[in-house]
Image (cartoon, rainbow, N blue to C red; front, side, top):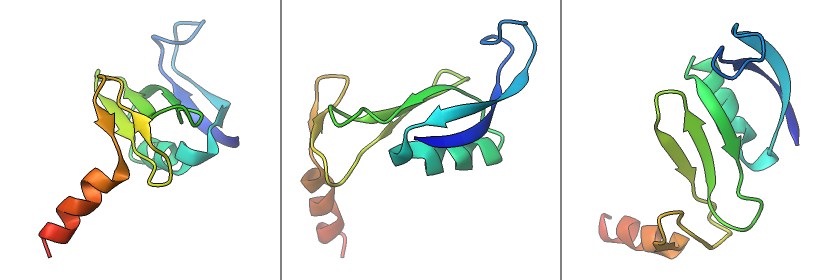
Amino acid sequence: MTKLKLKIDKSLSSTGKTKWKNCQIDDEIADIVKALQDGEIDMLGSCSGHGRGLGEIRLKDGRILYVFFPEKKGKHPLNVKVSWEDFEDEDENNN
């Protein structure tokens, strides 16, 4: 786990006010979470998938960013099987 100081939106805060908190973020996605925070993109939560599937980062505006790990194969949350090879083939065809 990686410790990051993150903005906690008032909608998630027990005080009803925006605050900053030191949070433990899964190592596999900590760099992405930090980049979003640095870019002032508000997030509601994140999870790496813990080796059982895709990682995800939930944005305050309702979007969800799914994180694919090249060394892991998983099942997409929408029941679509995904493997890294699916994307490698596209890259080879574009060169």
